Amino acid sequence: MLKKILVANRGEIAMRVIRACRELNIATAAIYAECEATAIYVKKANEAYLVGPGPVQGFLDAQQIVNLAKRIEADAIHPGYGFLAENAQFAHLCREAGITFIGPSPEALELLGDKVRARELAKRIGIPVVPGTEGRVESVEEGLHFAQSIGYPVMVKASAGGGGRGLRVVRSDEELKEAMESGAREALAAFGNADLFLEKYIERPHHIEFQLLADNEEHIVHLGERDCSIQRRHQKMIEIAPSLILTPQLRGQMGDAAVALARAAEFQNAGTIEFLLDQGGHYYFMEMNPRIQVEHTVTEQITTIDIVQTQIWIAAGRPLVFGQHEVNLQGYAIQCRINAEDPQNGFRPSSGKVTAYLSPGGIGVRIDGAVYKDYTVPPYYDALLAKMTVHGRTWNETVRRTNRSLEEFLLRGVKTNIPFLKNIMEEPDFLSGKFDTSYLDSHPGLYEYDYALASEDLVVTLSAAIAAYEGL
Image (cartoon, rainbow, N blue to C red; front, side, top):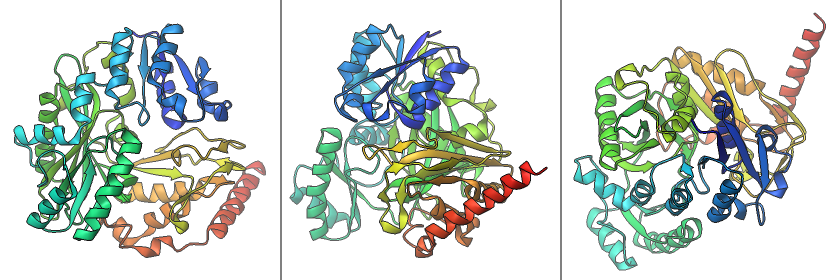
């Protein structure tokens, strides 16, 4: 088994990997920027090393990280998500240095990291894809020709990367010209690759993704699906497992398609195949994320399979210890991303010092985070502070438990989306499972709340509960 793993990430995913390693009796080394020298994950790792320069560049310097891993005699590197997680060159550097990259091979990353090539592979093995351009679009004129021939709306997408960057939905020639120019700029800045392609835009779909695990002996299983339709500008906010709308037959078909694509790509380790499911129940391959996902926790809760530990197990050369027939989906799970942002102000990021923090608990409630009282939320990173994942036997029980947990969640000093998430849990369409990717845009009432009042009410409630407990 591996003896020491360098965790090439920060925040809650670094904590998640460190916890998995501790249970496997594997030592961990963290990396950090100067602005987070006192972060929890830095303290919880067995070793910690400052990287730089600046708050971001050190996490993106592949050669610096590999050199550090060699110097401290780490067996492996876990990239988490974001930063270098899908960087094929980073995986190549690890291989050349004799360090295990906990993720897919460089060849698989090169194939699946390019959405155009991944799409072509899906078409070749018979998986439905959304109608789109053949390869990258070379010019605005070529994009206009495609859009006019297939009809608006269309979607402009970056060939590399993910997370909604470089992605635009357009409904006219004028919008397309601007979207291609701005999308290329954003993609180049984010991924170093300005290539774009176009797809027909499917109105009001469900965003369904299947979690995969594949070992080095060609055993591949899927762990069911997640519904990630509650999203803003293609950024996921709430994830649900399993989907409320998939029949057992459709789940089997989509799961088989996901496994077939992974096999065709000679994929290993953990990854996710993402589909769009239209209003008629037809599914289309969208992309594959060859890494751990933020929302992997909902799948862990309904399957009891530790995905991060399995990643490490596979990277160490061990086979999967379970087959497809042993994967059972138990109940429902909801993950809420607790973000430092202001939904009432265009989801503007919020930074500053956390003046009070108390996370919820109780049966079925899981918190993955790296926040504490007096922690300073830096302005340099993603807004994600913590993930709250709630499990229940039924959908209604899970929603009620999630709502109660959001009521208990105390995080002050920076604005968060907690009141907004609570409004979703109480909204009738969400409760009845009537949602798709247009949900947030079509429910403006979700933004109606008094943030100060919600925070103060919570403080009063918790103070009363603490006083009652201490008086027993």
